[in-house]
Length: 68
Image (cartoon, rainbow, N blue to C red):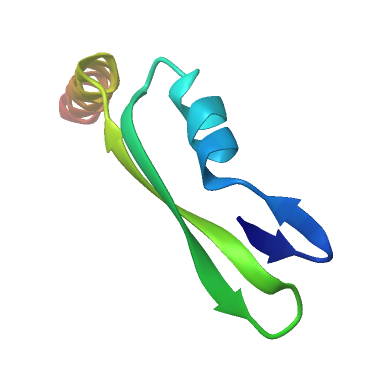
């Protein structure tokens, strides 16, 4: 548990919320010291295969648009 502006925040709860997104495969949430808020959540996220494919497809579309 860490504190964000007087609220207690559980890393596992944030990780679970992020993992509900189809584009996240793995998540780790850590507290980051902050002068104003005491601590802020910092999330490291590993993209899922779906996210990688989506990014790849949109990148290919952008390349096709530029070459036209």
